[in-house]
Each structure stands twice: as C-alpha cells, then as structure tokens.
Length: 118
Image 1 (cartoon, rainbow, N blue to C red):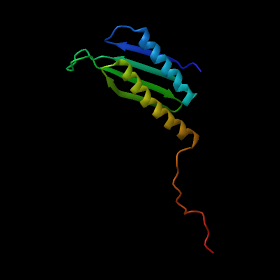
Image 2: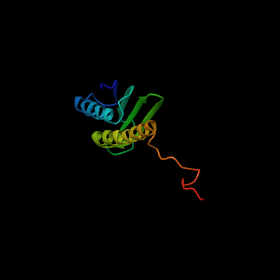
Image 3: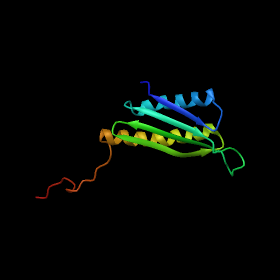
Image 4: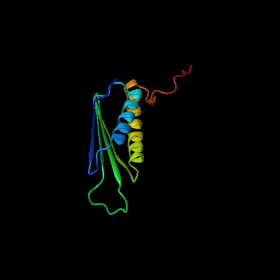
C-alpha cells in the first residue's frame, strides 16, 4: 500500500538521501497497520542552537482511522539516528494502536476465575 507522505526539511538543505531513508521507513509502517491515512515527517535543525554541533529534530504525525499518532522527541547530532529513533517511537505507537483495534489488549476479569463451587 502506498502511504500518502509529506516530507519537510527545515533549516537544512534538501537531501535525496534523507528523503529516501524516510520513504523506506514509512513503507515499513504499512507492515504493522495497513490502514494508514497519511504520514507527515518534519526534519529540522534549530536556527539558534546552543549545542556545539547541529542537533536534528524529527517530528512524525501519522493519521489512522480514528486517531492521530505523534512522535516528536527524537533528537540527535546524526540525522539518520534521529530518523531511526523517531520511526522506532511511531512504530511502537502504531503496534499498540493496531493491537487495541484487534482486541489483543489484556482485559481484567472481574467475575472471578470461572470455577464453580458446589
């Protein structure tokens, strides 16, 4: 399934390699859930940074039926590490969402253990 994807690179030059990595990671998301509506990925470096090197930040906004999943805490000096961490976080959220949709979440039984005394 082709997932509608929007990639934005802010405060950094356009990079075919970065966009290619993001497209590959997005395609893998379809393995966990095949009803993804859209995916927006923003990779940016802050214009004013107090850090010695550039710190890349990756934000992923994934739309699925009935929910919006967001991963926005991935930061690293290596843009590919930041991308990997952000997609790892969104993949975990998507797996949890898919399990809830399929009813695989553990439910607590309040009525006892099912044995009868008698």
